[in-house]
Image (cartoon, rainbow over all chains, first blue to last red; front, side, top):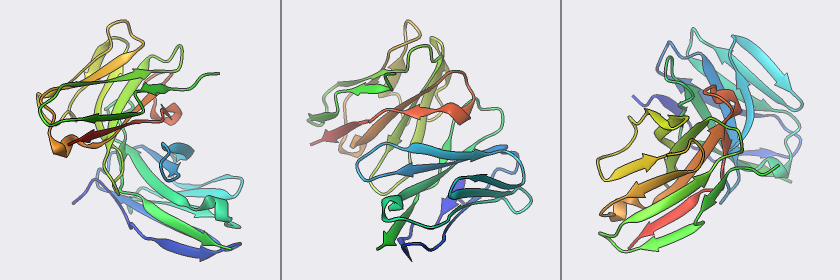
Length: 112
Length: 114
């Protein structure tokens, strides 16, 4: 079992729709969870991080965490073509400093 | 202000050669991380430094890989006897401390081993 798993996609949504990206992780002791966006040929860019169970909203983005189910998700409301990118879920394992374990990423395509 | 910079942006080498990849972190950032990203995959952790010391090198694939950060700022990732399987984008990130929430990535070095 991979430490962090994501559906590779591609996920295709129409402009204006809600995009839902999902991630599961294996280390139950993990406390910190991150979503990065990566445009083709570019480096990852941090969108959000979440530490507590529940929802965390920032503009059009909402991160959701359920530690009991070892599940974290990212919702993008009012999706725009400029949101088309690969979204990487990352987990900070317990007691390992700032080390991040990434999933393989989900490719999102927003169609005009 | 200036972000994380990496040089070179592209490196093509022949199998068996030695390469060095450089990372300049954001000024004042004490933690520095190296990751490797293969096509279609997420970044894979290699090593991280807190100051001058390697706090965790558990991700280095084998003893051909080595990294240094002698003055607690610039870091160099060194790969000996390169193999075709080493071809990837090597990403560097830095953060003010060891907290993962403020980790900023550089543009990466694309390494191609022929």
